[in-house]
Length: 272
Image (cartoon, rainbow, N blue to C red; front, side, top):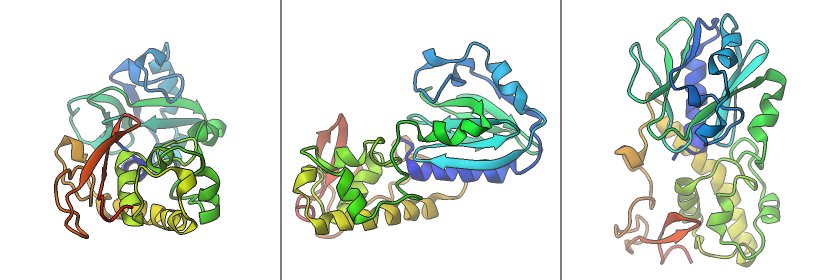
């Protein structure tokens, strides 16, 4: 599933591919992709997607934004905001690719929103509301507004497992299942540990490692089309997707459990 690194890469792709030339076309191939707000439900589609996108034609992108897993652009008096859902990505190609849901065209090949599972969406909102909509229901950005140890301690509290808390977008925006597993492995923290049981040293390690981990993934993937590990892409991660394989630090087999409906990967020796 796309997380903060993939959203940031997609934001950069929009900026690189669309540039600062006027839109010639903005078209919904799948009408349900244009929704009243950033919702995963096709039932929240706008009644007139063509009408929602029409004001973009002739306007020029002036800003490219991101908060957590959400991103978009401002052009004229409108903003186009995007959530990639479970499998969405951007592709630039002369011909329409399979599962294309939306096309944005300036002076180069079209930029397509491709989404096999249809959970991804776009919302067209007034430009002055873009930042508010991106942040709605979300905590600070896990990269650009990274929390200090004290700030993280303030949100990691109570009896909830630390991995589940890190994935709560209302607390910290952008971390999903993969990055939570990798952050906690690097911090040497058991993902099942209750937030209230974490030591100050553990919280400080998580706070320091979180932005570093996210930035490293962005730096390593920021080229060409995104290929998710769940879709057959290379697994560059230390523990995610490696059940039964030796831990890269101590060779203990990686174990799994289920937390919040998602599979958690961790090393039982390193993460105590």
